[in-house]
Image 1 (cartoon, rainbow, N blue to C red):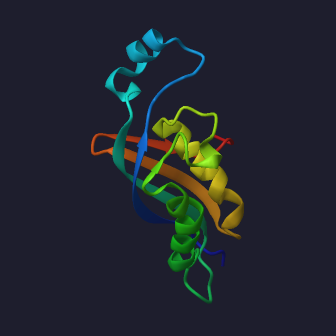
Image 2 (cartoon, rainbow, N blue to C red):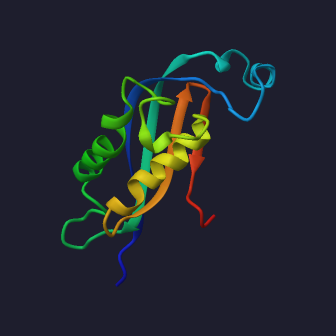
Length: 139
C-alpha cells in the first residue's frame, strides 16, 4: 500500500521595514507606481510554508513540524525580523521588496534544506487583506 500524500504547514510572524522603490525608475515614476509605499514603512508579516510528501509509516509524519519550524526560524525569521528588508538582508539585495519577491526569496532560502519533504507553497501575508502564494518555478 502506498502512503497518502499530505501537506503540512507552519506559520511564522515577523516585523520588518521596507520601501517599494525600483532604482531604474525616476522618483516621479516610483511615487506614481508605489504611492505611499514608496516611503519607508513597516509591516507585521506572516509567512506560511507548506511541504508535501508521503506520510512515513513509522512516524506518521510528512516531516516533523518542529524541524520545519526550526528551519524557518534559521533561514527566514533570524534574517528578516526587525530589519530593513532593503538594506539589511543580503538575500534580498537588488530586488524590489514586494510580497511577491519575498515569497520567491523565501522559497530559495528553504528549498534545499527540507530533506525528503518537498516544498509546496510559500505564502507571504503582508496585511489582513493582501497575500501572495508562490509554488515554485515548475508551475
